[in-house]
Amino acid sequence: MAEVDSSRFLLMACGQIESARFEGSENLYCRYQIQHGPDWEVVHGLEQGITQMASSRPTSTDGAVVAWNFPVDVTLKSTNAFGWPQVVLTVYGDSALGQADQIQGYGSVHLPVMPGKHTLYIRTFRPISSKWIDHLLSFFHGMRPEYKDPRLVAKGEGREVTRVQSYGVVKLVVNVTLQGMEALGYHTAPSAARTVD
Amino acid sequence: MAELHVIGQLVGASGFDDCPNVFCKWTVEHGKDWECMEGLASGQTQVDYPAHGDVAVWQHPIDVHFTAKAAHGWPKLVVEVWHMDTYGRADLSGYGCCSIPTSAGMHTVHIATWRPVGTLRQQFNAFFLGGYPQLKHKQLISDARERYRLVTAAAGEVQLQLGIVLKDFDRFGVSM
Image (cartoon, rainbow over all chains, first blue to last red; front, side, top):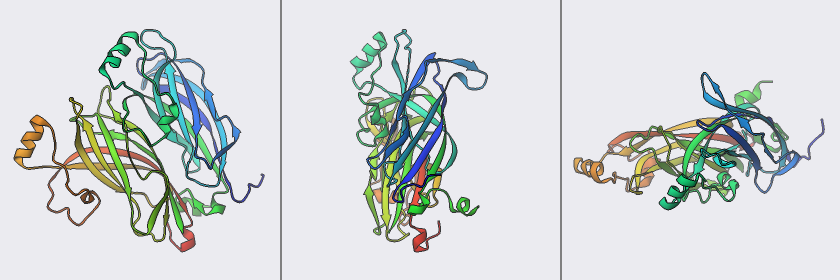
């Protein structure tokens, strides 16, 4: 296995955007973007991707579920844990009136800092308009308000002014591998787990 | 100097039955041997208006980098949950506080929140007009010394998902 440059560490995340549950929405697709800080760089894999259009299937336990099983495989390198990569998800689908490409939900999550397999459920939300007239118009023509830049959902600033309605959940399965972090003095797993050889 | 990264999310809140349209003002407090190097150590989430149920989603990212000269004064996360009432006024729902976990790895943290109960007259006013009693001194949320005179009622629960990355603590003989 190739040695990494001793001042850097590598984070490999591979997994799938498994499925999603959006009650009342039939045809959905999802776009993912990896959002990271200035010290990070993608060395392998795709920083963003768009899934296929999937239609929902009723299940006995979870209601109507769409299956994407969309592979995500990305490796990043960094010198600093600050700016840890986030997965930003944007789910689009048909509206009740049949318009295509309507926003169904935004969501984001940091990739786990601990090596291993993680199953993440990301609850998503969509913005609601602040003016009642826009609210009324969107009710009639079926177009929903969207963020100009979906990367807003990965930022901590500027959120206090936004109003949202939570809707839907996306299941993400991701395996995280870290290389070269211990050599830099970083600990990302509890000490009990570290001492087991 | 040892370093601590707190990487995660304010996931959301549940159990705020009176009014589930909640948002959260959060801040990370720490001792004087600690310093925030990068990232936001305080902020305010979006307001969620859940269509049904009492689970509000914030998915508010946290990514803070601290340096420490000593283990004491370990950072605490202080939250204030507010709700938007039917007239668009923000009113207090609950206060809460938790220690940032000291062991590296992924942690799910639940904060049980509370709010002050005022006098009978204040409760009467709050019921009809809104405006629950609030703390005058916010340091009470994270301070153990001055709590004993306070009468409170249980509010909902705030959920956090935190990833903890430690650097160089073992070099100073601190076991985590």
